[in-house]
Image (cartoon, rainbow over all chains, first blue to last red; front, top):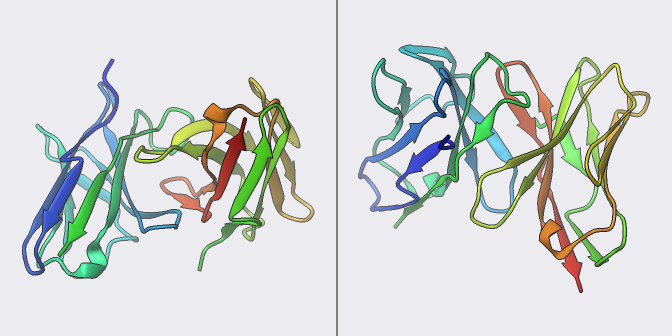
Length: 115
Length: 110
């Protein structure tokens, strides 16, 4: 049973470009969570999605960031017009139920570097 | 601001020693906490959890203690091994999201 798959593992973008981060949840998991981790910091919640629905986006910046989890395919975190401050590790987690508990698993993350 | 934090950013121990990593939280209504281990270049890995109706929970070589009076929890690792070297985070479960502390880096020397 494959774990949460994130790609790419590393992404380099120039300022002003768009970054697309993908997350495929574990089989049977329909709940996806995105977190951002700055260097030397803990993870910060961004958004929680179920298939085709955004449930909680209280941690998402108001501009340039968006997320989706379509009926088919992976969840996408999209960052438009990236700036240097967007450089971070972005982690996705998935769960079978609506809760980050023992059954929630994290992917290996995408490390975004904005140059 | 953050509701969960850790007392020390780093902890160095000798192989075979017991390690204690501490965490303080501020939300007295929190009812569920999780400890995660994060190795370099990897995502957080679940270690152990505890609900607020418990004071102590034990796993394999790990024990979590919860003191609701002072809003403090700790992770104890018995007979620490080099493979335990990582960053450890406590997290407070807020139903749809986890609130993470900043982490403690555990270094184990042989």
